[in-house]
Length: 303
Image (tube, rainbow, N blue to C red; front, side, top):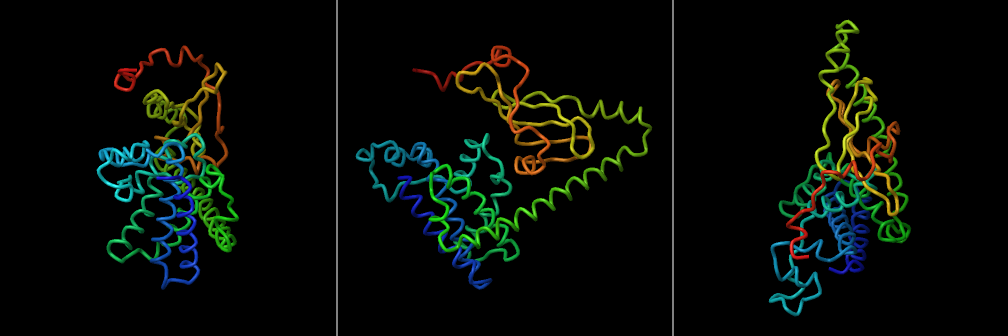
């Protein structure tokens, strides 16, 4: 459960993954498996760096004892400690890093990594057509964590740095094309739905369809913002935070949805589009915004 051990292990597995990938299709099963393990170990290194308990299986007392420095009280040794799976590890990191999650794969994007790794590990099979996508997703998970964990990218990627750069560049180009396709599809759907209406009728109908959405809970917030595809009011969802010593509530978006044309964008696409502010103040004081906030009784009971 030591971050340094997990970091070193991640680098070793990634080196083997890149070596296998460079050998071609006959070694792709090793490539996706090893890259998945490398990503999992680095995700857990990030969490363990915050606190080892963040990677321990929550219902296993021995594992929690080892994670909290009380291993001498455990019935089983550290080698038999249980930790969370790769999907849970990614989910925790993604949630913790949501304010800095630009270009960090979300749960839907990351899921094929776990499926591919488990497919090879448990059944000896994998989807050949998805190998490059799975592999580049692993690289996109690893890159920002190297910075967070102060790992030198040159050391981590070693002699495979150029291969890494090529795969990332290909992903960026594909992502740009996919985003433009999504915008084009949304514009076409908007025209199909409302193009036949008179301007006034269209305005009345859209005003009904695009009513402001209430913020789901504290910590998250929804701002109404023009849709980049059809210009109708859409819902820009994000997190709020207050900087130390500041009296302003800031909003950092991570998703956008438009009910008029069906456009939906994740944080990666928002960053690529560049039409939304990465951080902006909310026009409310801290007291106004958090007026109805109540502490979690379970969390603070006994403190």
